[in-house]
Length: 470
Ligand SMILES: Cc1cc2nc3c(=O)[nH]c(=O)nc-3n(C[C@H](O)[C@H](O)[C@H](O)COP(=O)(O)OP(=O)(O)OC[C@H]3O[C@@H](n4cnc5c(N)ncnc54)[C@H](O)[C@@H]3O)c2cc1C
Image 1 (cartoon, rainbow, N blue to C red):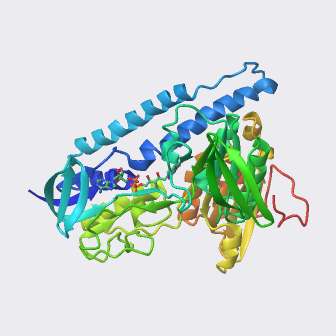
Image 2: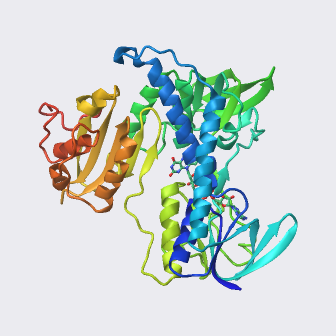
Image 3: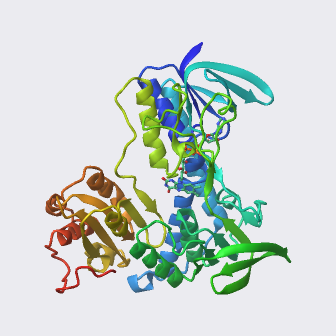
C-alpha cells in the first residue's frame, strides 16, 4: 500500500498531525520507536507538573498553621512516582487509542528516511519499508549534555533520569536557569532538598521580562535556593559518593559539594537518519529548516515540533502538527501565530505572551503598561499566595494588547486568556470592560487592562508612579 502520509514520532507534534491527517481522509501511518506521547507525556510536561503539584501539597500543608491546618506532612517520593506513572500510562494509552480510533496505522520501530518517498522501519534488526507520498518528521529533541559533564544517569542526570530516581537527593546542583531548571528548583526546595542553581546568563529565565525574572529570583531565594547568575559550572569530579563542582563567577570561583547534578542546560533536536541524503536542509544546530507551511526545502517532506526549531513547547508542537496536516490536505493553513504562550510552573508561576515591555520598545512600539499587584486580589489572598503581579503591554496608537506578563499562583490558568488577547490584538479597553468572575485571579488581568487605559479600581496609584516597576 502507498500511504498519503507517514508521520515519524508520536509526540505532541506527530500524533496530532497523524490524527488530523486521518480525520481529513488520508491514508496515514504513524511510527514511534519509544512511547506514545513523546517527551511531553512521558518525561516532560506531565511528570514535572505532577511532581510540582505533589511538592506544592507538601509545602502548603507545612505552611498551613495560620490557615488552621495543624498536620505535619511526610513525603514519599516512591508513592509520588507510583501516582505519576499511573497518569503517564493513562495519557500514553489514551493517545494511542485516539490514533487507532481515527484510523491511523501504527508502527513501532526506529524510522529512517531511505528516499523522499520511502520510510524504512527497523524493528529488532529487521527492516521493512513504508511507501508514502508525504513524510512528516516529528522526531522531537533530547536533553543536551555539557561537554565536560556527560550524563551518567546516577550522579549527573537529565530531567529524564530524574524520574527514574528511587529517592530524592539531599542536595542538588541544577545547571540552567531556564524553564526546566527553575521548575525543578522550585519543587525540590519545597521538599526540603538543598538546591543550588547556576545560570550562565545574567538573569533567570533569559529573554523574559526583567521584572518577572527579578521577582522569581527573590522568590527562589526565599525558598532557600542558592542562585548564581553569570555563573558557569567549570569542573565537576566525583568525591566520596558526592560531586564536587567548581563554579566560575564574575568575581572568582566557588567550590560546592552536592549529591547530584541535574543538567537542564538546553535540548537539541533529534532529526531522523537519512534526511541529508534525501536533500533536506538542516540549520547549524540540526533543526530541519521549514517555511510557514512547515514544509522543508523538499516539497513532500514536512517537519513539526521541536525538530523544526525553537521554542520547544508542546502547544507549539500541537499547532504545527495541525498546520502540516492541513497543508498536506490542500487546506489554507499557515503557522504564523502572534501569541506563543510561555508558561513556567515555578514558585510563583510565570506567564509570558507576546512582547515584554523592553522588547516592545526595542521593536519601535510606543507603549503604555498596565499593572496589577496580586496582593490587591481577594482571590490571591484567600489562596494564601498574594505574591506576584500582572503586567499588560498596550500599543498607545490603538490600545491593542501586544504583550502580557504575569507572575503568581495559578497564573498558568490565565495564559489562555492572555493568548486570546494578544493573538487577536484585543483592544485593552474591551478587555477591561469584559465581566470577569469574582473572586478569581482572572480579575487581575481585567484590572491591569483598566490600569493601562487609565482607570484602575482596586488599587490606588499615586500620581507620578505610572512607570514604576514592581
Ligand atoms: C522536563 C521538561 C518539561 C517540559 N514541560 C513543558 C511544559 O510544561 N509545557 C510545554 O509546552 N512544553 C514542555 N516541555 C517541552 C515539550 O515536552 C516538547 O516541546 C514537546 O514534547 C515536543 O514535542 P515533539 O512532538 O516535537 O517531540 P517529542 O515529544 O520529543 O516526541 C518525539 C517522538 O519521536 C520519537 N522518535 C524520534 N526519532 C524517531 C525515529 N527515528 N523513529 C521513530 N520514532 C522516533 C521519539 O521517541 C518521541 O516519542 C517540557 C520538556 C521537558 C524536557
